[in-house]
Picture (cartoon, rainbow, N blue to C red):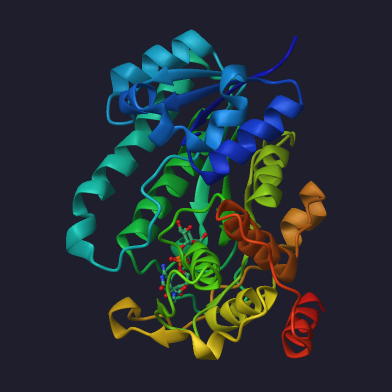
Length: 342
Ligand code: G4F
């Protein structure tokens, strides 16, 4: 009999890759979605179009404990992947206040519903490197101190501790992944990698000339979302639940990402990119880079898509969407791309 998985946040980048991954392994895949997603699928289910008829979607809300009990009762999942959350890192605490409570409550309601109605269900919580925030060591590992610097990081840290509590107190098979930035052509438009890839395509198409970015020296540990959902699944296949850092262990600056992305299109980023102080974040002093050793040793996980391949895939997808063919790279651009591939 095939296993049943329930995914919250199935409409997002990670949710869509995870659903594909599980379907390929013969899972019966259920997703919790907001009612509006079912009423306006074109807008809300765009990442699931190609697999929509193989999924079972349930309207429900993480803000309603009753609706979660209902869905858990109905699905009786073997595995639950809790990915839903407001995911854009906003530096303004004031603006984030309403989302903070909702996300923490949602995680708690879901854990409680599973513990009560499907206690054997294995649970994955989507933690994030933002929980480390102003990390006091680099690279960060599972034992590094958490010092979140955004309400998003605080919210995720609360979810991480709730997950640990349900594991220790109720014996649930509950694990958290501390995931570093993971990107793809399905990334939301507000994130820097997608902004750059889309900007390159717009410039190549002659629709705009310049691209505004924030801090070009900010460093991130960027991997491909497809690789990261595999790590989530691996965590739930272990005999014992645990928490894992999922990262490439390699960091690059926003400038490097831009340089490579423009080079892929035969362009020079210095002629198009400018810094808009409005887009610069405060307090980004410690680079967030993960140490994925534990995931490698215990899960046998390793990222497969490297930095240059990720950048190329994202730029190519944006150009394809506009019907553009990437020009043959100039020798200088080819050199940048080659360096990125090293
Ligand atoms: O793409 P970002 O907005 O991602 P951020 O803030 O690192 O968060 C993402 O990754 C986290 C770790 O997995 C997740 F928890 C979170 O949900 C999300 O998925 O920014 C990346 C870096 C930052 O240092 C930012 O300051 O890029 C810098 N940046 C420079 N210019 C910019 C821009 N970020 C954005 N969004 N837009 C810019 O123009």
